Length: 494
Image (tube, rainbow, N blue to C red):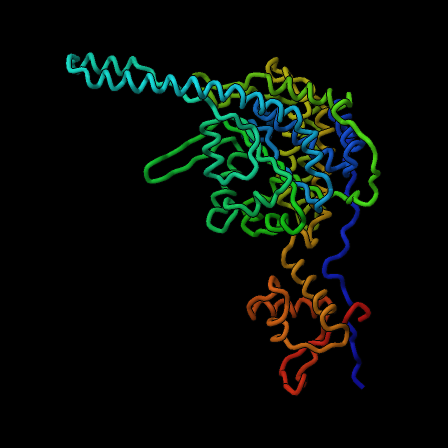
């Protein structure tokens, strides 16, 4: 008798391991206390709270200095690209509302001041246009005199847009804000689908958006070339902090172009274990919490600090640099060398090589943020990042790299894995273990988002066979109709 080789039933999407513990104890005292306060008042996951506090600190700091590491070609901005993956109800919005409270107040004050400045600008612009027409129409003026009068006539300058945060700009809108507004802004939203599913990430605009944002992350510069207009921007800073549900996040993290361009590798990503079902309903008053008040005071100090602008510009940064002490350099160099080696064949970080190869730079940026948040005058007085601060930044950076490794291969990062898992679950629920189904029936009756072309369906059926979720059943008669190709559903028990 022939030997029957049974195929083990494998998990298509293995259960996600527990999240890495965010190293809150390494944060500066004010930031650490703010994270603990958020965790107490909001009862959200600790890493989510830390994510919000770090992103708020980044937004307050990024325009004030760059970090200079000898191994990198040039000083780097302090901007970070951050993404937290969380289900609805995880209270990310509540965390951001509290973490960004001082920034929200600063924006409100900017809008008030802008309203008055805009009124004065319009008055001045009307007077300018009237005087310009008067000079142009004055028949008593000769060419040289008219030219000189027009040259002496100074056109009013439009006030800068009062924007620190944008929710869902496409690249065109973002460049417009950077041209006409503050030199340092952030794309911040707790509804990441608005950004990831918006026009800027559509098929036609996605390449431009990814390239433009990557250039801003790299060097704070961007350009737009059109038939009638060429725009070059330098000295700008853009940080990103997004929260998205798993299926929405996979649109970015599983996107082949975003991965190949290194865009995904720039992001610091976490997916906290949920606290839903464990939270207590109780009174809380976060606005009177001294820990948050101290965090807000420090944010205000940074926001009220004049942005270091280039000579003769009003929104082009020329920031001082923060260097490293010899001890900090050794800590950073050790991390960078270790990560580099572990990205090789068989190395620990090989599965997340794109993120790993950006880690050392992200760590330098985090170190700059931690140092500047503690001492807003650090860059002005040519201070340096200490070894202790760099070690703290390394701990934070490694947290995010370990999170990336934990999420690798999970359905949230791979749309095709998710599709396989959903197709397997649908077959079991619809037909049950032991049922025999032809591919044509699957293609016709599967949920709309799982229906696909014949080539993709056959590839998925082959993968499900490899996982042991289904097995070929050959030629079968089903409801008085013969099918040349069919599959038997194995089910959970195999």
